[in-house]
Amino acid sequence: MRRAGHAVFAFALVLGCGCSDETPAAKPADAAAGAAGTSGNGGSGGWAWDSASPSGGTGAAASGGGPNCPPLGLPKEVPAGFLEYTGYSCSCPFYVPGPSAEPLPPVQWEPCPQPGPANSSCKRMMTPWTTSNGAVRTFPQFWYDSKLKRGRLQFARLRVDSVSNTVRHSVVADVDGPILSAVVEVGLGCVLGDAGIEGDRYLFNAISEALGTEGFIGGKIGEAPDFAYRQPLQQYDHTTWRMTGEWVIRWKSGLHGRRWGATDEVSVYAPSQDIEGLAPHNVVGVGPDVFFRVGGGVSSGVMVWNEDNGSKPLVRYPGDTTRAAANLGTDGTDLVWTYGEGPVPETATWTRSVFTAPHSTDPDTVASTARRLRSDPGTFMVTGFAVGCGYAARQFYQANAEGNSANLLIVRLSDGVSWIVEMPPTSEAALFATALGFTCEEVFTRAQFPDESVTIVRIRLDSLGPGMPPD
Image (cartoon, rainbow, N blue to C red; front, side, top):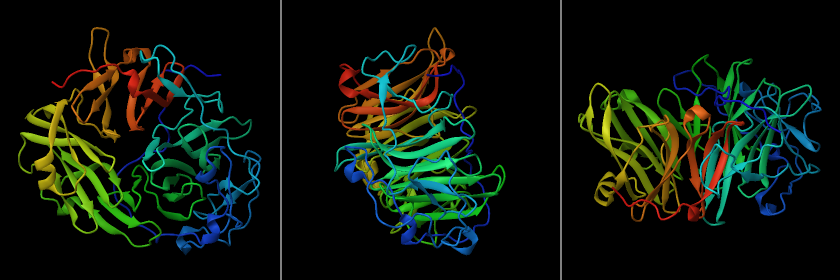
C-alpha cells in the first residue's frame, strides 16, 4: 500500500562542504566486527556469522564508542536476533544481525506504473516495508562486481512501519534479492546515509544533530562495521563522505583521504593550492584513483588524485574560458565525461559533447585516446555519468510541447549509439533522477512516480531498440 505524494523526497541528511576541527579516528577492535550477514550465501538471503559480539570496539577516547559502553537494552523495534553495535559512539547505538537473526526481507521488483517510462521491461523496487512516502533514501549507491557478475545496491528502507518509533534499515543488497549487510537505526537521534560501495566494502555516513557529531561507519560486505570515525558537527556545514575500495574521502574545505582502517589523513586537494582556487565537486573513484570536478563561474575541469602522483589536472583548461569538462564517471575500465566549448559568459553554457577514453590517470594518455561519442543534451551537473559494461547514462531535462521532462540518456561507448528513455512532463510528478550504474544486461537509476517518492528502477538494455546514430 502506498500514499500519494508529488514532492521529491528530500532526506534530512544534508551534505555540504566547509571546515571544522577533527577528533582522532576510531577503529573498532576485531570484536566489533561481531555478527553479520555474509555474501557467500547470498542465493538464499541467509546470514552467516562469527562468534564475537558487535557491541565491542576500541575507538579513540574522543569517539565515545568501545567495549566499555553501558548496555542500553534493545528497543522493541529492533529485528529479532539483532545486536547492539556501539563502535561509533555509546550515545549512537546501531544494530546489526546476531547469530540467531533471521534474514531481512529480500529486494523485490514490480512493473513500473504509468505515468512513467514507456518501456515494458522497466521495474521499480517494491516498498512493502512502509505505507509512508519517502520509502527509499534519495542517495542510493551501486556497484557491479565484474568477477561475480552481480550488481549490488546500497540504500535505506525508510520508515519501516512501527507504532511508536521511526525505524530505518540501511542495507547492501544483491539487485536480485538477498540483503547482504544491514545496520538498523531506531529513532532520529543518529542517522546513517549512503556513502558508497565498491569491491567488498561499504560506507555509511553518520550524523547526529542532537549530539553535534558526524562521521562514518564502514566495513566489508557481509560483516558488521569494522571502521568508525566521529568528529564535531558544524551546523549548516556538514561533511560529505565518499569511498573507493582503498580510500575513505572526507569532502570538506577540500578533499582529504585515509586508507581503510587508518587513523592518519593525507591531503587530496586544497583549493588554496590550486592554480585557479576552484572548489571540488562530483567526487568519484575506483581503487587507488579519486576523480573530481573543480569549477566556479565559467571554469570547469576534471582532476585526478592517487597516492603515488598526488593531485593533477586530467581534463582541464586553466585560464581558457572557451573549453570545459564535467560530469566524469568511471567504472575502472572506461572514463566518460562532458566536454564543452564556447560558453556564453553570462550563463556559463557550452556546446556540449559526450567523450570517452580508457580509464587512466595520465592526462596525456586521456587526451590521445579520447573519442567524441555524440552531443550531450544535458548540462553540467553535481553528479556525473554512471558507467559500466561499455555503456554510460545520465539524467537530463528536456523541453517539449507539454513541458519539461526529466529523461534518461544511455550511450554505448563502442560506437556512440544512444537511447533516450522518456518520462512524462515533470508536472505529472514522474521523473528520472541520478543514474546509478549498469550490469551487462540492465541500467539502474533513481526515479519518481506520482504514487511514490524517489525509488530505484531497472531497465533491460535489450529492450531499448536500435537506438539513435551519433550526431
